[in-house]
Length: 359
Image 1 (cartoon, rainbow, N blue to C red):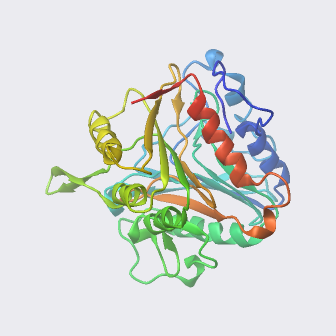
Image 2 (cartoon, rainbow, N blue to C red):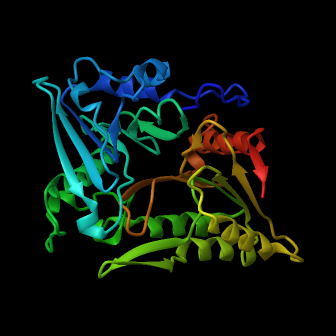
């Protein structure tokens, strides 16, 4: 987790590993390869002297000679995939994916695969802002070759789209899903057995028994489509409808924490006000919305946690995204504090913080 300097949050004895430290641990573990997908690669601010120390720490990851890329910033419409061979230490091979040509959307996937054995997946980009000015959260899994190999297949799919302006009609078996534990979007990016992001989110919401806590940068169920040079905005209802169903028909308690920042769309407040109105004069109905107003930063988190499952991901619809769903079983509940309980505690900490305000 990255918590910007100057952001005062009650840790309750549960301070998590800083992102910069976690990334260095992954690099230290690497013996053969490091595969990184990020919307941007910009580990230098324009004014390096004022850049916080957390960002400077990952400018030059030592023996993995990828720092020449760190002073370049790319459009979100081009997916940046970086593959580093550790054994030769000759630098990084970089591929781009033209998302505008493929889906008319953007890129929001952010993950690492190290030696096809360790992974990171979360909200943080390879951007100095993610390691200094933004609140970010992700998961690192060590010695988990099943998930790492599956995520490597997602990476391989992106890698094959380099310099293409179309999606292959026949999928290579090397990119099909192995375990179905990773969700992917958009639909065009889902080969055989790969779960769509929207379906994964639906399963998480449907399985919730008592509560659903959602932390997301923006809540805006709209998509922009370009047709013959004209941009058309349409209502994109799936997630919005799922939340309404959970609240009204199942009586699940829902809390929605959204960011309030310079790019917050004015219609955001219309949509969340509509959600809040659902519980008027209804018993056993609870839907609360708060805005996370961080004066000099941004809550860039994108996750959902329920009483039995959590989802960490990025985006869906026309944008490229990857998500991870973890469901708790009874066998792990007696082995100390679970990762689900950690994530719930993070949400409740942010919900009670001085920066969260009711809408």
